[in-house]
Image (tube, rainbow over all chains, first blue to last red; front, side, top):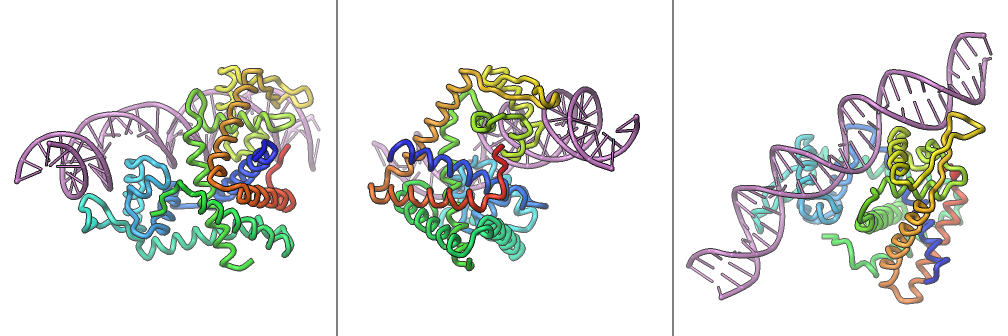
Length: 149
Length: 149
DNA sequence: ACTAATTGGTGGACAAAAGCCACCATTTAG
DNA sequence: CTAAATGGTGGCTTTTGTCCACCAATTAGT
């Protein structure tokens, strides 16, 4: 992989993450902060979510995650129960309200994606999707990182 | 673009930005914060960089940007001069030191990209690059957003 | 089986990052 | 020629995140 190619990838990273970041900011209108949203979506994503997994996946300090979950719990978005296999660990479960919020967040996220993609004609949209799909597969392949669960 | 495809894109956004974020965190070892690095690179990127452009492009509050630039100035990475065409505006220029730092940041960034891509064989690397390249072109096409300069 | 080290989670104290608001100076619009 | 808009700065607050100490449970060493 030569320097020109690396340059192109770096350009993409700049552009794309920036665009996404901007969109995401304009979405969490109310009630819930960005960190809280991230944790909530991570809980929704994981099979058996525990604070420590979230802390690892999101690379956030465990005490911070603990506090975030506390707030989510106070908002009745998340229930905490002690795990039976390991009584130190807490199992996290979304309440119906919590699930609704996650759904809303996903909807917002989808609209952002649409807002990027809508400027393209059908053929281009297909190309966009195919490229993303390829990258997903390649990332999964080379994916030594990111402990999913 | 149907729901399944959107889902795939959302998955990519999650995975990729997270991976990049984690890598970036482990890089800015010292002296300079993430925000400072971003601003510095934006100054390097823009034709006639001013605080307000940076504030817009990075979607950061202008007072915050003002403070970041102040620190960069104190570190002798950036010079500030009042613009002649508009005496409210400040023109930003990287010092030699500043340019060196930017170069270092770019090198780090490249190493991160390598660390993702190195797990792939040559054919896969080529596919990775091609996908990114396609996305870049499509983003540029549909790019109503992101005022470059 | 028993102590020692490790791990999951919590809370206090604090630092860093980022946002909001009020304000000044200049520029632009009516 | 005043009124609105814009670029920039500083005070203050919120959000985000770190570091440390600690408890309870689990795992490892012997």
